[in-house]
Length: 171
Image 1 (cartoon, helix red, strand yellow):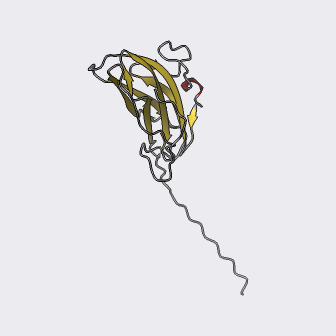
Image 2: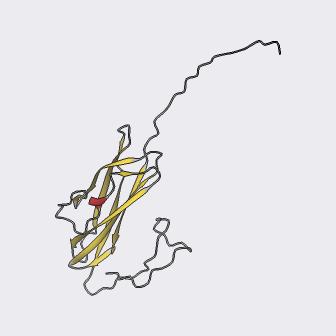
Image 3: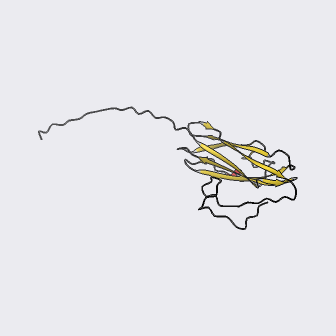
């Protein structure tokens, strides 16, 4: 209490490192098997941003069906990918789907195609996650069966909390 004032100064350096972008792409087909001579298949594409910052969708290309962001793409129909938002938020996900006609006979090699997303973060770092879908060709007159369920955690496995969906037509 002598009225003396004290002061001090200090500086600190903090190094910031860019967080690397991280994302996954999942491509599914419905149905997974078509009877010969082929048929229409619906494909779903999900982009999951696992990183800490938004990612811009620069491209979404399919190895067989081409540019999925092109509204005039003649290889696909009912294409909702053209309406995807331009970015996937940090920790978020987006999904779209499209239909395509496949032609094949029983015994032909399975139809396999890969979708690749070109994604960029705000520093311009580009990543290209991809996934493929496989559709088999079955003999005419064969039956396709299975269980349709709400895959709430998107792991492609039916968990106890995920109930079946009735009245869904599988073709």
